[in-house]
Length: 437
Image 1 (cartoon, helix red, strand yellow):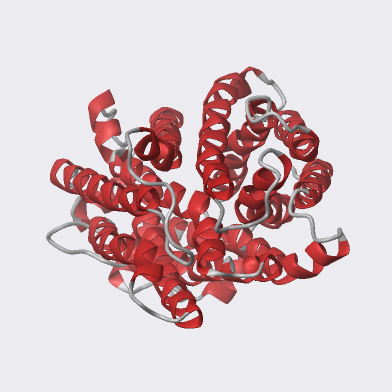
Image 2 (tube, rainbow, N blue to C red):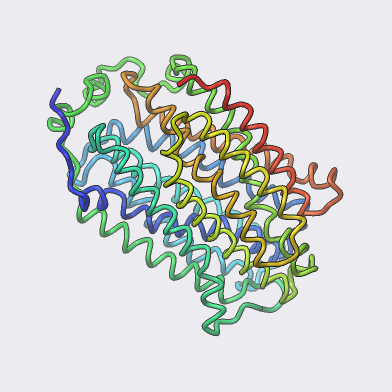
């Protein structure tokens, strides 16, 4: 097997540049879905149910994209066709979703339209996101993988920051941040429009700059266990149950940590708008101007979290013990969550969200580091990474199903759900001890 060649910085950059646009779309979804459905008239106790669809689509789509793209060879490449189709659908849905309340539909019909649009949006985002991880695995040698994933992480966080602050920026330049009851404000609608435009431009750039290897070249640079899939000789190709049975123990132990971490993140995305409106703006009325201001500020707080993630990601390599780095990061994030309900100043809220960013940095880097190292020699990398996405999606589905029940148990205050998220992070930090390097 030939050694993969070193790639220049700009070739590594081009491999992941489209991720910038995809992450803008993902950030807009993460920061605004609860706001959109609350504006349409959803009860806070039912908000978590709307969050079942995104991880459900992820757990269905990413393994399929991973497995199919392992065996796909076209004139346009192996992974890129899935990337382009996913991005094209995402652009269309991003133009429809925020208009759910502007079509003259009843409240229930508007929410149903929003749900269907959300399902297609998350399906397409997942379809566009997965190929970027695989392109690095396919074309970058071991020596440069850390650099390649660092570039991808930078683009991920940069896209997140931009997507999070769009509604705040558009409100600042004069676009209306209020609308009649049941209608999403123009500041949010235009955020989705501009995000969609940037997404398709970024993906077009990547698809025009990246040329994937043909089957012969791919086989020369990659293990034969994967290349055999392409000729149909692998007996268990696409058999997810067999792959899971043969997965290394690290796959499952990291998955346990993931369960508590991603449950916490689901509650952050779901309840932060209501929590900040309640704690800082003293309102729980989604039709009020104060609630929409809180919604804009949540975008700023999520952007602060992304900045904190970038800074902490630069410090993580200084830890000699990766398990310790992972665990400490989650403890810091857990404390950050617990602080949110006790800070009534909107600017002091930067502190807990910077702390949450530390945990987010570890969540983006550490699990894939442990798992990809453990999978060396197993083959089926695309399928395994798609299946590992289940450790991200399943906890979110469980958390979404239990969200309304837990909210009732903690007194109906969305701010208290931040403490629930913090406890979940702390449990995850304890579970890190079970991971073997």
